[in-house]
Every structure is written in C-alpha cells, then in structure tokens.
Length: 600
Image (cartoon, rainbow, N blue to C red; front, side):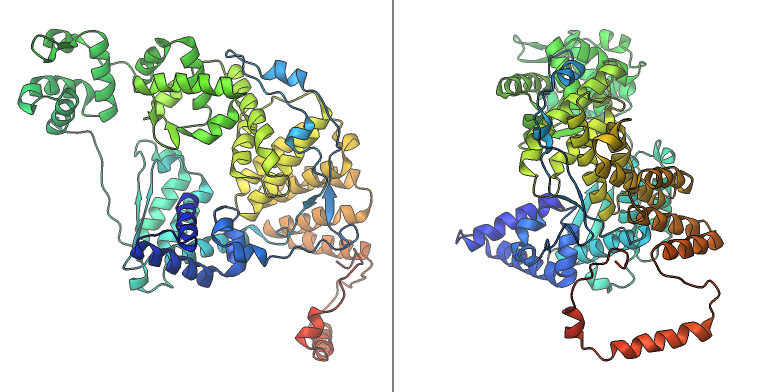
C-alpha cells in the first residue's frame, strides 16, 4: 500500500507542477485521492499514516490541519520521558558486535536520540481496548480498498507465502475479504490472490482459521488452485529456453531432469547448475550448441536435501561473498538497496558489499531489481543465514541494527519513528540477549523501544508492541530505576498494558507490582490500576474488578458507595443532563482545560 500511494503522490505532484501526464492516469489519481478523503476523513487518514507513511506526502493539507496542543505541557498531565544529553564513546559495543567481516557500529548516545528531551508519552490509545483499535483498523482498510477500486479501475492484491504471516495480518486479510456485507456488489471491485505452502499450513493455526473463515463466507467467491511441479512439457520448455535449443533436441535431457526434480522449478535450476559445474553439460564451440552426457546425468542424484546442496554452493564461494550473503540474509528474503546502504559502516564497505552481491547475482544466488536484492527461494536464504553459529548471527543482527539506527534517527527526532528505524529495532530484537555496557546508550535504546511499542499499539500490532516493550526493559538493567526513573516507570506501565492487550492476564500483576513499588505518588499508579481492573473484568472476575474500582476512586478523593441502585443512579443522571442543557456546544468547547490531575 505504501509504495502504491507513493507512486500516486508522485503523479499528483507532477500534475500540479504542470508535467504532462496521461489523462486517464491523472483522472484516476484525482478521483482516488478525493474518494480517500471522503471515505476516511482526516482522522482516518492520520490513523492510517502510521502504517502508510506516504499518506503524509499525499495529503499534506490534512496534516497541516492537525493541531498538537503543547500549551502548559508540564502541567496538563502529559508525561515526558527524557534521556540526558551527554556524549558517550561506544568502544565496548564495537568489540561486542564485530564479526568475521570486521563490521561494527561506532556511535554515541546522541546518535540514537539520547538528547531527544521532548518525547511525549502519548497515551491516547490507553483507554481503548484491543478490539476497538483492531475494529477501527479493519474498518479503515475496508474503506480504503473501496475508495481505490472501481469497475473502471479494479484492484488485485497478490500476497505470497501466507504461511509466514502473523495473526494480526491474517485477521486483517480475513476482514477485507469476508466483512463486505455493507458493500453493494458493484462496489466490490477487488480481487485477492494469495499463496501458501500446503505442507506448512498446519504450522500456523491463524492461517488455518483465516482459510476456513474465507471458505465459509457467502460474500466472496473462492477459487482454489493446487500448484504442483511442472510436467515434462513445462520442464522441457524451460530447459530449451535456457539452452536456446529446439524442444525436440532437449526432450531426452528434460525427461531425465524431470525424473530427478519432479518438475520443481527451483530444483531444475539448481540441478542444471550442478550438471554444468560437473561438466555434464558443456558448450561445444565446434558444434556451436550445448551438449550433455546422459550417462553422468542418470548417475547424478538429487536425493540429498536441497538446503544441503545450496549450502555446498555457498561454501564454494569466497569467504567475503559468504559473509555478505549472511549479512543480507539477516534481513529476510529481500533487502531494500537504500537500507543496505544505511547498514554499511562507510562508503568503502558499501562498495565492497555491492561487489559481493553482484557476484552472487551472477551465480544466481541472488536476484536484483531497481529497488531490492532478494533471494529467489527461502531455502537459499536459510542456507546463507545458517552457515554461521547462532552467537555470531546475534552479533550480525546487533551490529546491523545499531548501524542503521545511527543514520535513521537523525531524520526522525521530531517525527514518528520511520520504517527504517523499525527495521533496525527488529534487528536488535533478533540479537536476543546482546546488550551494551554504556548506561546512556542503554537508556536511549530503551526509549526507542518504548516509542516503537506505543506506535504498534496505535496500529493494533499488539504482539509486536509486547516484543518492543520486552526488549526495552532488557536495556534498563538492574540500575534502570536509578538511571531514569520516569523511563523505567513508563516501560513497565506499557508492558502491563501490552500483556492485557495480548490476553496474558497472568503476566499483568508482576509489572503492576513493579510500578506500584517504585511510583513516587498514587497518580503514577493510576494507569496500572486501570489495566488491572480491565484484566479482572476480561477474565470474569467482576467482583474484584469493582472492588479495585472503588478503592482507586477513594484514593482519588471520590467516596462512592458500593450499594447503589437505579433509584440513586437515574436522578443523578437527570440532574447532570439538566445542568448540561444550560450550556451550548460552543460553551462546552470553550471551557478551560482541566488542571486537576486527579480529575483528569
């Protein structure tokens, strides 16, 4: 979605600058942006911009209207978390994160936002329960897909390797496909094409639930296609095209290759490469065509696991290329070229990495396009990733994350964390228990993970929020409360909230107790008490939830009797309604901001 709307924004900018654009394209762009504003409204656009950053450039007028009230920020109840502005050398981190290719991150606490003193702990979503945030997200995406599709310009969404998708993504996909009862049939101009490996489906229960929900739905027509290996004719066509020979000449070779590979395109490609390297297939300059030895081919076996074969191919390459491929594999199946540049220590290393990747592309280990380097198959990525010990992999991840943060945070101090910053934080999470000795850098990283977790809650990515808060807590260490009391308080409080949102009620008390034991006053405990009440109610323990409510209200100066009935409630409601009727809407909008923290 982000890349799609980035292109839309570019076209719209060209139109406004007077650059000639095809009339049909210009009309589609203007219609689409207008419908998005109509369907989503300004609050919806701002909400989705957390997931689709290109909305900010596509709808600058919307974000110009967003007013953030910073007036009396120290006294209006907002909580500020800061990290001291002091330089700190990072020699110890250099030693910890260096690996075989001598890569390491070198920076100080300022590089990752340690002097970002004006971070506001935005708890605007704390009052929302998980289903409310999730339902809003699903609704906005339904409206978005409806706005960008029409009978004249239908949309097709292709999602590959669904077996790796997380629960939240699958729930959103299910909602987009199934929850369309409110749309007229002529408004439904979108097609979904999704693929998954049937032999891995059962490992992801969320995927099983998604497929079953879609197939049970009467709102959408579902067509199943079982994609197997190529038949002999398909294999022959592939080999004939590769060798630039007529299909009648390559058929005997294709029959033998098909028997070995069962028509799997990747297996065919790997098998042909092996045959070439073993000179079973060679080019004859005398006959000006490729020749092959059928005796050797029949003796060659593909019984071994493909991963082992690919590992052998990787190990046959230079050590420098191997290390670079492991470096790229840390990002998953593909890596953006601009992110690759940010992960490089300097221009010299970036050039060296690029040269190694070009060699891998030439050997068909990697694919390359204008924006990405990518592995052609996950087994190749797995072979590159697992060629080193797990401890060394953690070092790769940690070094990559720190190096990207050094460059990414400079552009995000006064803005929400960028997508690149989230890539860096994910790398640090994958480094698991690796940490840093410098306390100021630890506090800076803890702050970044707090911000990332808050952002994830806003977009209903609750498991991600839990991971970010957990990693943030790990950087606090045993001396976190002494080094930065406010940051420690907010991280434990947020972790309590994340446990509730992820339906982990047994973990809530531990973090609540930690906040209560370290809070300076009762107001610092209120949010955790609120979460405790929600947790008790969600588990059916309503009596204890009400007891906790009355206890908290008493601490806030509101004496409420637990013995209430409708004869007391309704007169109080009518009295309040009569009082409000004395004021107009404008009067209520202009009342002074409440300053009593307990009343807030």
